[in-house]
Length: 188
Image 1 (tube, helix red, strand yellow):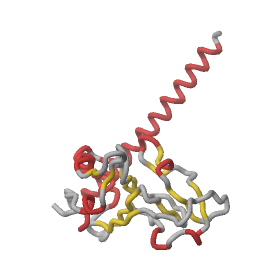
Image 2 (tube, rainbow, N blue to C red):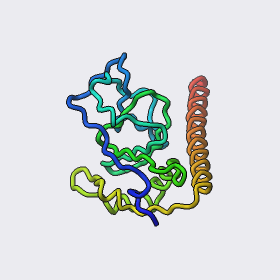
Image 3 (spheres, one colour):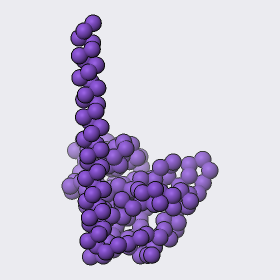
Image 4 (cartoon, rainbow, N blue to C red):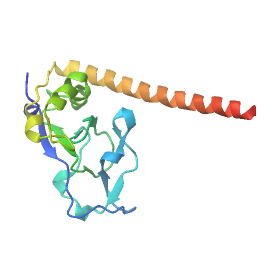
């Protein structure tokens, strides 16, 4: 089984020289922990914006990068799919970029890192007492089962379809609950 470091480049998220302040005309989106939306582990649509002059260019995200939350009680992996021209992830994330797309599918890696065995391996490697975190060295030596690329693509597609279905079902359940509540309130 290959190690994660054999499949991806692992980089820490960006650390800016100063606290980022929202600039509605800023040309770089700044992804922070609060921008990770709920149980679907996806980036929200309205992160902070800053001016590019504050951002190291090597920190810019590319579609297909994987963002792994490095600190906290959960360590979800998110596949970055936004079409924003420029975005960065802050230092609470690791950015994983696939080395060879001909052998490794980023959607598969994100899925595997979110599975019970993937999360258990991350949990076993956490360090720290007040805010547990994963080190880059621990992440690098995580063993990843790697089927052929066709199987990886299939797994990634099924996992994404399940995530979207779950999200839609939750939205439907919420709308139904609101409609029932409204109908009941109208009877008062």
